Length: 389
Ligand code: KIV
Ligand code: ZN
Image (cartoon, rainbow, N blue to C red; front, side, top):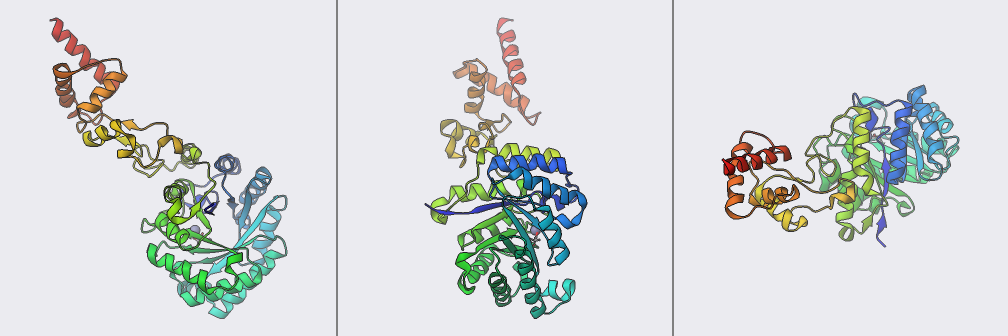
């Protein structure tokens, strides 16, 4: 059996922090139900101290999830935040408090205005304080991606010694390169005493378009939890997209020695749901869930896919709930695609007859982005009229 990678969904917390993507409690509950259908391991339901609405969302999601998933609330390394999270998670069957603070030189110097020693002290204090309420405490080292390697080991060691069950290594600003981020995770695996008894999580942002690659580098180097969101929703350019990282792990399960327990057939439904609730559209060429993810429009590709799907598709669309591959008829389509579509519509054309319709098809396709079934019917009717004239 390969290593199990926990999927920690933060659509309802980090995803919701995306400008314009906020959700009310009822909307969050609808998304949470879909996260349970996906079978995520952890739902980060919100930041309870931030507003009464978010507190209520965490409380209701904790009730909803029962023992199906861990439900987690975010806090700063501040006692009143931790009190609020503990209160919101009071009825959770599997509660987790996610607490922590910045660890990079920029966060220490410019945001928190504390020394390294004070940072370590606060890390220990917040983990110990959260432990008074729950057994499962996740510590985050914000901006770990830009932190000093040895200082990061020191903070994480202190959090582990204080009782953290999961240590989250975020690339908060999406600054890292995948290879370097992977080295950082390895450095922790090798440098922190007792780390084998604790899960390392990776939490990556997409500022350089590499959030999924960064998470994969983390998995390759020993991370056992990936934090992600549906459609990659999240602050600025977003977070690691769940559908991308889960499918990447699945496609490379043997070489990574890793798997997840996600029900991938729910991905497209989840994507549409989050997009319609938040109003954040998904780009057509988005991996896995975009409208064009399984669509083929050039003649060479269409010919290949019609002969054998995997010549140009690495994933069976049914495996992610996307239905079937699509052959889109455009001016780049060839005879094979046209013939195939006409056959589906009940017209068997060969040789010269097919050539004639293909020529008319190309003339039309040059004037339009896509040729639809009704256009094909018109071309056939016109050809029949000309033949009978
Ligand atoms: O990006 C980040 O560092 C975060 C933490 C609060 C986990 O979202
Ligand atoms: Zn984040």
